[in-house]
Image (cartoon, rainbow, N blue to C red; front, side):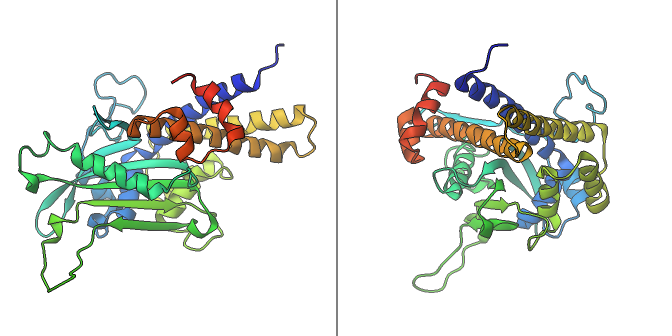
Length: 338
């Protein structure tokens, strides 16, 4: 059997990780899971019941409403909402993991929000992740021109949220939720503007951690359990159903199984390569290789996002990420001439 070259292996790994990423996004876009994320991260929902958030406030119809082909898909409560792509001639294209419209109860009335949720494998991207989150917020505001408001009707701008779920973070960021937003500050005198006129964008970083860490509860426990490589699919389903009262529909169970099976496949292939190389610690190395594969895909995704959103060349994107010179030829070969 012909041995796979390192470059061919990296290309295959990229495709496999892309499928795993898509499975994660589909799982996250389940309304009941989104509802728990919104309640924990969006202040407008702090006093709402998660069932109301899922059933009343998240806008959108089931995604496969035109031609359902799988069981439970016709009524699967997943978000349709907005397009996941924002494109301009001068600023490039941004592709969002998940983006949707939602209404929120305030003082006697409903307001409309635009929410973006991103699943980020690694906190270490070569640039401050929060800056990317704020950039996404800014794009979601500017993209409202011509849809939510026209001409000088700026009063119709909708508040936007960009929520980043980070699977691998530094120790101090584990099991944390951190919010960044616009605040009013009087430098001279004392005046008060209506908060709704300036509180228009919020970025939130969610750092997942280990079960034995501090603050491992609520949505951090839910997301940590979902993306943990230690929990079996049976344990994940038990946590969703018993701890978070999320019904296990056929669609949700299928998407959870899809994500778990893909993740398990990465680990098993890594273990196999470890044994083939004669490593005594085959299982440990297998997991390490699985993580390395994830870092390769994360790096490629970051490069493409920088090139698309900033209009940079491949070389400029690698410079911004401060990529070591020794690593660059591999990514040049994988991404091809630009």
